[in-house]
Image (cartoon, rainbow, N blue to C red):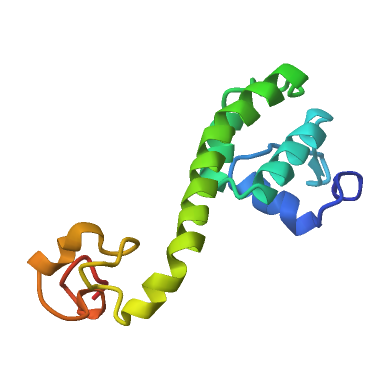
Length: 142
């Protein structure tokens, strides 16, 4: 299966451990993958390449009945569901790209005019200075 799908055996084991694919065991305790797993692996790989989280892939594949090869209609539905998420990510990255220069210029990422990390100076209500770097303040990790 690994050779046919173009992935490492460890990748198959990983996908199986995450519930993305299933296998049965032979009498010699070897994994046996049904044919429809090839299509599921293809979907997983394309989705991962698009940056879709494994949890989202798992949820999407959960809508395709076990034991059935995902169809073209399944793929259209799954990919359509991911398009909005990908578009939001693209829009966010474009905004980041366009505002990155001014953000770097602010120095500490907590000034009132930083539209990326502190829009409307919402962190200024918690403390003064580099709030994002202070443990326990403004959601910073401790």
